[in-house]
Image: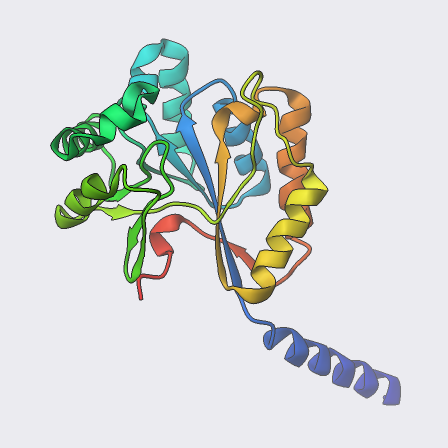
Length: 236
């Protein structure tokens, strides 16, 4: 009986300690899909059963049957929510794109309609700009007018706090899994919400898919880390 009571007491103390750990929210966000690599992200998410957010480009969906299939995978995955990353991705001509705020709004609205997006949440291509609740941040002067116009039309804009960077030549990840894990842990030591940017093309190869699994598994060692969709990012 003494052993049983001691064990129960220890369990209660441990549970009490754990309950005092502050919840930390991680928002894994994947840009530019559908692309080669999207199918591996979909597979990882189904296996890991965790929430992610994908910011989609309408022209990519229409580019090929394969990419349309990847888009449909995302739509059918119960752990994935889709958001707006513009229809054209500015054709990577960002300065020209942002020189006309009305055209940016039209591009975003076209993507919303083409992909039947349910949430008025946008990540602007090539810009780390925020317009959500009280969080307002610009990424240089280019894009500010467009961001303000989008916000005036009911859109929320999400940027990112940390990026898992990739090489331009072949899209392979730059930071190691351990480096990303440590950086996320460091950021969450002083904050409760962290938006992480990744790109679909980073996960084309099996070893890259494995690295995504490994990062998720590393982070799940923290019982107080929660993966959430970006529509739940605080708006206060």
